[in-house]
Length: 251
Image (cartoon, rainbow, N blue to C red; front, side):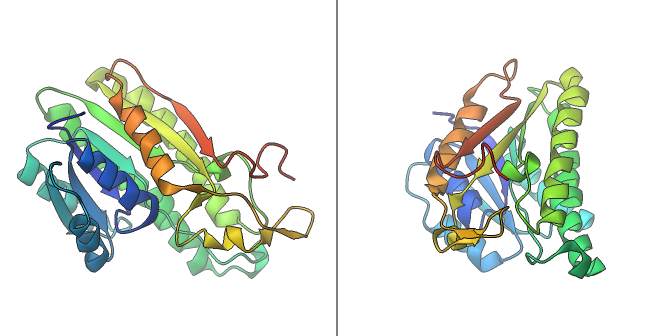
């Protein structure tokens, strides 16, 4: 149990974000739920069980730095501190050859996956370095795509590689303020966005294949483990994936 800890989860209205927010809540955390759809955030808060920490739903567009700053201000005002940021929210572009992507499609992915992750980390660091006791943990959702691409995934893959650089930089710069930063690289967690895996997705050889999946709850358990460690210990990188998915040897 982590009674009294405060977490902020981005993309908490569905999928991995929702599963993680609920598991943290059930383990004694109070959780700020952020995402663009207020009704989805309220649904997450509504299905939380009794006996956990408090839930605070904050409609947030992480691509907008002012919206992000407001969300972290509300979190600090409500809970007084921040112990964990799970930088989970992300988006992707249509799976088409890169020469067919529009500039807006590219920019939309960069704005959420890179800029939004940075804005959230920046606000978390401001709170964590000023609070007493000082410090906290940031966990970035890097994805399997931070290691290897799928076909027709240039915007998503590029941004997830960028997250690895951001994770390392936060880890380095956060040391003096007792801020730990790790990255969880997730492969084939079954959510609304990845249900297509169970129907067949393009492979590097041009074929389509149904791919094995795992549950979002299993990812949530990994996030909880990463934050269960004391701040003097850090899981720098963790890969959690469906055992039989075509990742090792992809392509």
